[in-house]
Image 1 (spheres, rainbow, N blue to C red):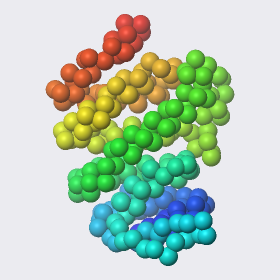
Image 2 (tube, rainbow, N blue to C red; image 1 turned 90 degrees about the vertical axis):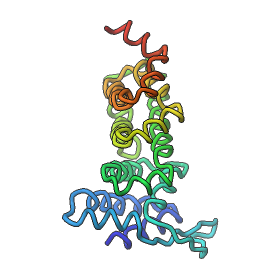
Image 3 (cartoon, rainbow, N blue to C red; image 1 turned 45 degrees about the horizontal axis):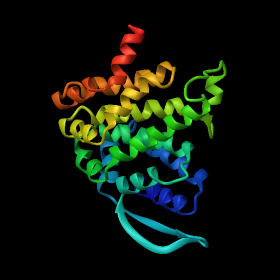
Length: 232
């Protein structure tokens, strides 16, 4: 069923039909993780051929580009404006794929870490905007941070979980350091007074700290020292 689901995602994305894409991504998330044939499902995502439709003002473009499922998902992740309803199951798929070493090369070749980082930054920026740069954390925070029935805090958590999976391998650790992700992870600590955001930053820094190069970069972050001095 994976090829059929991917084809529906491709078609739905080309005509911007969230109601078509969202359930397909949710099913893909489940069959790649909970299904008895999850290894086969992941292989089909990794190696199967999918038709990626273009789009134009008149609807679906008849131009067809053949690509693999992971490429299709990476393209959808970086589309703007984002559909948070679709991003949440998509991040679940990425996290599952990141746990399997067989998917590593394909995920890296499509620069998936960069696109997850973009989603994380977008969610963080939206949280900042809705909480007055972290200065106002109201009692109805959960409701305030829901978009399209999706919690932005859940998006941050899923991004952190996916990146933490990648951060277990040295090559990805160095890639994140070179992308200046460390400075952003440290910023998660002290710019917003929300415990789950702090936890996401701590989780990622803990994974990266085992790499000597990353550890040095973490040590150089003044913001981290200021946060520790103020709270411990």
